[in-house]
Length: 72
Image (cartoon, one colour):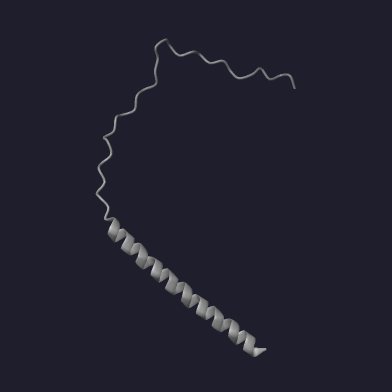
């Protein structure tokens, strides 16, 4: 149990040593302007589609539940 000598000792780096520098990259490109009005319109349209699909699913669920209730 007492045989562990600890981590190995390392050799210190030479005085003034620094890790190699990475290559410099170009600055990021400028992104195009966004058309916020068009984005809002598309989001509104997507919301309407989502609500229509949800309403259709609800109607199908109600129809299935009513058909099960009328069988009994």
